[in-house]
Length: 69
Image (cartoon, rainbow, N blue to C red):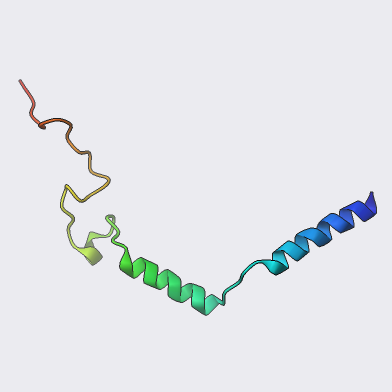
C-alpha cells in the first residue's frame, strides 16, 4: 500500500516536471500584450466610449425595436 502511494506520487511529480514552462518575465510580457490588444468595455476611461451596437453587455433590441402604447 505504501509503495503504491509512493509510485503514484512519483508519477505525479514526473508529470509536473515534464510540463512546459516559461519564465515569469515572459509570462508578464504576454499578459501585458494581451491586455493592450483587447478592448475592455468596462474601462471607458482607457478605451473611450463604446457604441451600443459594439457593446456585448448591452441588451440588443429584438425585432424592430418598436414598442406600441
